[in-house]
Length: 328
Image (cartoon, rainbow, N blue to C red):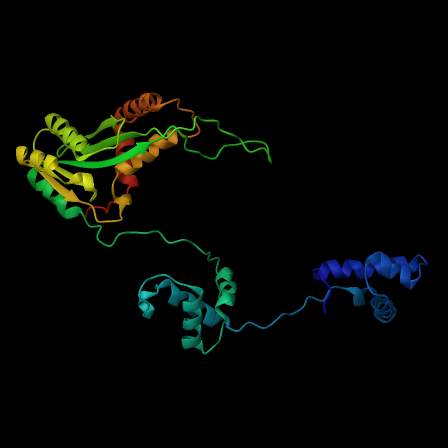
C-alpha cells in the first residue's frame, strides 16, 4: 500500500532517513524516527547508493487515465449548457445520474453517478439549489390594462411581527457567540401594506396599517375603503389568493367602487409581490433588536414606514427586487 502523504512529503522523508544514516544512526533507529519500516529504510539506502540524490526524488503517481478525452469533455459541456429539456428530460435540472446517462449515450463511457462530480469540478461547476419560479407568472396583461385605463397599480400583502427578534449575522470574537436577550412573548402585531404606482408620473406610494389582532376580511375591507379614499381613479389591485381576500366585506367594497379591479398572483409565488421586499426591509432594520412589546414594534414599524416613504428610489427598489417579469 502506498504510504500516506504527497509525493513531496514522501521525498522529504526519504532524504531525512539518508541524512540520519549519514550521521551514524543504525537502520532501526532511523526507521523509528521517520516512522517507516526497517525494510523501507534499507531500500532507500540501496537506492541512494546506486542512484544518488536523483533516486530519492519524488515520483508522482500517474493515477487512473481519464475516461473522457478532452474533446469529449468539451462536447459534453456544450450539451449540458443547453439544459436538460434539450436532451429530453422533463426539466432543465442536471443531476449526477442524468449526466452519467448522457455520457453513456453519447460516448459509450460508463461513469458511476457519484464520480461524475469530478468532471464537473474541472469546469468550475458547483452544486447549487435551484430557484423556484412559478410558471404562471405573466401578470403583464393586468399592467397593460392599467395603461389602457390610466389606472394606479397597487400591490397588497400581509405580514406579522413578534417581539422575538429576527437574527442577522454579526461580528464577535471567534468561539464567543453573541447572545440576544428578549422577552419570551407570543403577542403578535399584524400588518397590511400596499405599494402603489401612479399611471402618469410613475410616482410610488406606500400605505401601511397595523392591527394587534389577527387580520380578517373586515380589517382588509376597512383598509381598502381608506386606500380608495386617497387614491383617485381606477385602481388595479394585485394580491395573492389568501382566504381573507374573499367574503361579503370584500364584495361590498368592490360593489361600492367599480373602479377597483382585482388581479391575483399565481399560487406559491410570493416572490412576485414587491410588498414582500418591503417586509424584508422592515425586518432587516429591526434585526438583532429588543422590542419590549407590540407597542414598541408598532413604533419601530411606523419609523420604518416614514423612512421608506420619503425615498422614491427605495420604494422603486422593492419593485425592481421582486420577480415581476420585465415589460415587453
